[in-house]
Image (cartoon, rainbow over all chains, first blue to last red; front, top):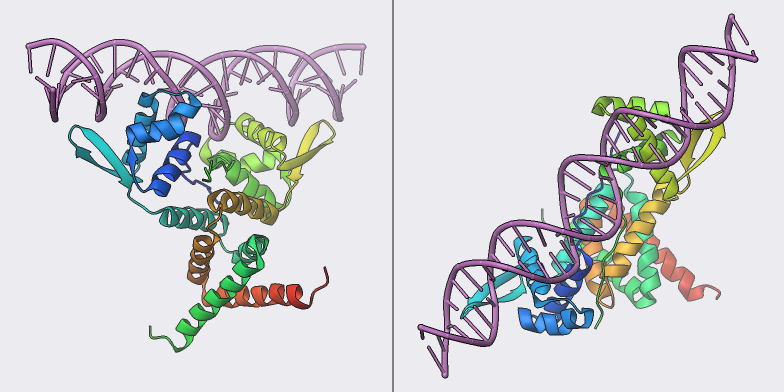
Length: 136
Length: 136
DNA sequence: CCGAAAGACCGACTGTCAATCGGTGTTACG
DNA sequence: CGTAACACCGATTGACAGTCGGTCTTTCGG
């Protein structure tokens, strides 16, 4: 019935690291990113620049010129990105059987610690409350 | 601090459909799979066979000979596969900030319906109970 | 025992995409 | 105006998936 295509647009190795760097430091100048990630890898500044540009073209980074150089900065937060990713994955995987997914997730959360489990509980409770007495 | 590589081994288009077919019908003979998925696409039986084989090599399908032909069957359940996928994704994404993830997930679950939200609640409650009074 | 039919494999191509550079313009500044 | 710094474009390499064609092997009715 449901053919599940399964198509997430993930990032490559370098791309991921670059995004993380930019997300962490909140900003990304080619030189800086290269010093932090490129140099250790022994790759050219050029490569880093291309990657930054690709990320920009993918809409994950924003950039603006300062003098004649570009300065990049995140366009979507790490959270938003992850959120979207998980959303897509989940959407594609679960085409009906949300059950399996939910329990799978609880498993994961549990592994992350009891505190997270409790946090999850609180969140769910809140949502349900909003639904119940909520408007809409 | 944490560089998040981000590497999920997803399946291709055809591969996904084949897996779904096998999961649904519980079984996969080349001919059958081809009739169901290949023919409509206008692709050769050969292509389907290659795909089945690749899936087998990836460990997702098992197979055994019946006469001189192979009959495939799922080696991991759809649930297990999804579980694993989500687990990897989550594991790679969240390297510390489990928070964002948890709330993101609740969002998704909510979108799936209140019933799922309640199911989630029940599950969490159960886990917490097990932890509390549980052995270990 | 023999040949056709069914099926499994291997090798080869194409297309997509990330990672990488080199080479070539461009621009800000002393 | 020359140079250093930087942006871009184009090309290459290395995965992979999707697709086949060609070929070797096994099974089975005569």
